[in-house]
Length: 346
Ligand SMILES: Nc1ncnc2c1ncn2[C@@H]1O[C@H](COP(=O)(O)O)[C@@H](OP(=O)(O)O)[C@H]1O
Ligand SMILES: [Mg+2]
Ligand SMILES: [Mg+2]
Ligand SMILES: [Mg+2]
Image (cartoon, helix red, strand yellow):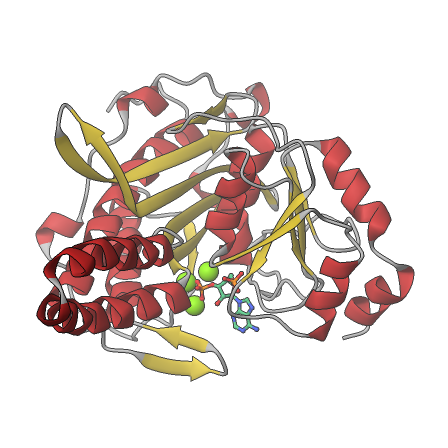
């Protein structure tokens, strides 16, 4: 890899390749069927896929960039055992390597960078997707017994709905400099495309400040106000903020990464989550990619989160994001003062 390429660009290119490998780990754990679920707290789970994908990302990046600060969602063991050699990805995405680095980031050193890693965003959807897949095998056989034609149709529709859950899962790598997210990767392990009649699993979306975004086709926001929000972590405050938006539709999906993808692809106008619960690793990469596409992610009060190594990890005052600044302003103007205060005083 050419050392004339500025560090931030090289690190983003490496992160794209590492996220692809981590996505394969996420799929492999699911196919083996042994999820190894651990309950970390209320509505907060971890699986073997979260643990292994994080080990892969951190080991691969630390081996190439030893002075980086890397913060991952999952706890690390005191003496981490060595990872399999094929997890130590050294490739770097060629398209990203060719990007022009913003002038003020050209001299950035490893010591100036904090990388936020969410090895698997949407763990609830990952575990529920697995459960439904298991149930479907049984459902399939039951339906074959009843009527072969009906069963094929039903089975296909059931498969689609399961597949929909797994599509919410993403791998997030966010790169911050001077506390600000400047670049990021959102990898979607279960995104399916057909290339020349062959099925390809997974896609990787990236963004770099001033250079733009890649890995997908951006689309304008929908004509009417469509909100995207949590599927598995709602509460009365979250619902109150949804009511005041006066939206034509509310989409309830998993993961901060997936909700931001919905904004970028024109499926939703605004992402509203008026509650603590998300952490810096949930929002660093999505915020960077969204900003590179001209959008904005803040807390519910309209303030930016900071991503330095010593900041508190929880995003206590929620998330408000939109694909452009006008929509963000509109959504912010709809949030009543008492709701802002309720979150600020939590
Ligand atoms: N009340 C809560 N408790 C724990 N985690 C929460 C939470 N609310 C949101 N999160 C975390 O924020 C991310 C997005 O949440 P949601 O899908 O509900 O929008 C998820 O990340 P992970 O899946 O990486 O843990 C989720 O765990
Ligand atoms: Mg989690
Ligand atoms: Mg997450
Ligand atoms: Mg996670």
